[in-house]
Length: 415
Image (tube, rainbow, N blue to C red):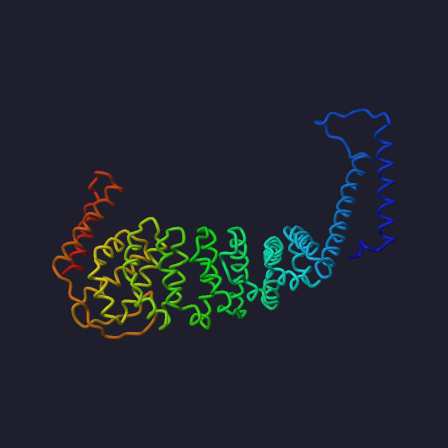
C-alpha cells in the first residue's frame, strides 16, 4: 500500500519522464552500430532500459494494488454486477501470487464471496466459486475461513439446476476444502454428503465424479465422520463406481475406510453386489491397485464370517485368487494367499495378523472345497502360469523349475 502515497507517485512519474527524454535523446544521436555477436560494455542506453524495466514492474505492482483496493471496495459495497466484476479481478490477481492469496483474505473478501455462492444467478455464483478456488490453492488458513464463513451451507440443493462446468468447479472447490482433514480441522460431512451423492448419481462427467470421490475419501479418513458417511445409498454408489475403471481405485479405497467399521461392514455384507463385484475386480490384471483394494475388502468381509467365505467360494473365487496369487502385485499376492488359506481350511485354524484389520488370533471353522472347484483352480492356475512363462521366456522352457514349483504349490492349496 506504500505506492498509494501521492508524493511517491509524483516522484515515480517524474523519474519516468526524465528517463523517457534521455532515451529519446540517445536514440536520435549518431551512434556506431555494434554487431550483436561482439562483446560490448553496457551503455547508458542499456542501463536506462534496465531502469525502465524495473520502473514498469513498479508501476504494474502499483496498478495491481490499486485494482485490488478497488475490487475489495466494490465486493463489499458495490451492486451485484460490480461484485461479480470484483470477484473476477480477485481471481485473476490471486491466480499466480501465493503471497497475495494469503494477504487478500485479511481484507475480508471471503465472506462476500461465500455469500455469492448461494445466489441463484449462475454467472455470479460461478465467478465467486472460481475466485474461492484460487484463494484456497496452497493455504489451509483460507480454506478454514471459507468453512467458518458457511461455504458448506451454501451448496446448491438441486443438482439438476447446475450445468456441467458449475458442477465440476463446485466439486473442485469441495475437494480442495476437504484436504483440511489432514490438519484435523472439523468438517461437517452431513452438509456435503447430499451434494456429493447428488453429483455421483447424476449424469455428470466421470472427471467431476472422481473429484467427488476424492472428497468422500478425505472425509472417510476421519473416524468421527464415518458413521455419517455409511449409508446403504453411499455404499451402493461406491460399489457401482468401483466397476468403472477410471474411478475404481478411489471408490475402493473409500470403501476400504468404511468397511473397517461395524456399520460399514454390515452395509457391505447386505449389498447384493458383494462379493460379485469385488471378485470381478480381482481379474483386472491391468489395475493392480484395484486388485489390492478389492482383496483387502474381501479379507475384512471374510474374517470371522463363514457365511461370506462360503458365498465367495460358491461364486468361484478360488481360481481367481490362484491367478492373483501367481501373477498379481506382491501385496495382492499376499492377500490372495491369505484368503485362499482361510477358504480351504477344513478344520479349526488360527488366523494370525494380516494386512487387513488387526483383530488378534481366533479360531474359525474353515469351509470344505469340492473336487470340481479344486480341478477348476488347478486348470486356471496352469493356464495362467503357462501364459505368463510364454510371455516372459517365449518357447524357452528353461523356466521349467519355476513351473514345477508353482504347480506343486497349487496342488498343496487344492489338497
